[in-house]
Image 1 (cartoon, rainbow, N blue to C red):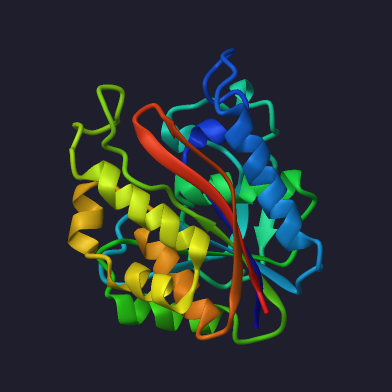
Image 2: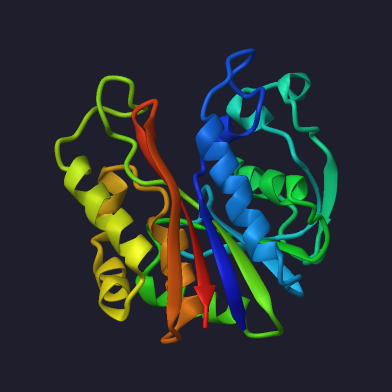
Length: 247
């Protein structure tokens, strides 16, 4: 049963030191840590990081085994990180032991900083997976015992000249609607989130689309109290931090 979810950005810059000696995203990082700490207060039996992954266009993968909290895949040496690149063991030891995506590592870093390093699972998926499969995954992830989710993903990465991809004028309106619906989380808002065009989300580099569909499946029809803890456009990408608490 889903008890709560923290929705956090997927940028590696949330980890101190990822930008070298520069201090960036301090407010967003603080909000993300607050969100994760809040969903852990009830001491859920299981915590699942749900994040965008690589090369899984036709499904999802559950990661397992020992994982090093390294951002080397993003070109960031472990020695630069001010949060240690520790080793942790995921609960699903018999599952895929391939390297996690950078987004998954960010979610795990936040959990470890908030004091949780056991009973953790990681599910990775992509915008190419059908909505029905994503919502079914969400239901499956919370089927056993009190479960919290750390849902990693950001809004469009196409804002202005600093964006990782070319600026797109459609990004502003889509991000405003998505952020409003995530912060509202009423049945109508969740219906709109579910109906968001995955191809448009992919074109606008909305990396949170698939993880949010998993969250919708995990929440089901139960009432949700949602709070927006912070939002910011940084380096051309729109980020948001929210908490969903299930009644």
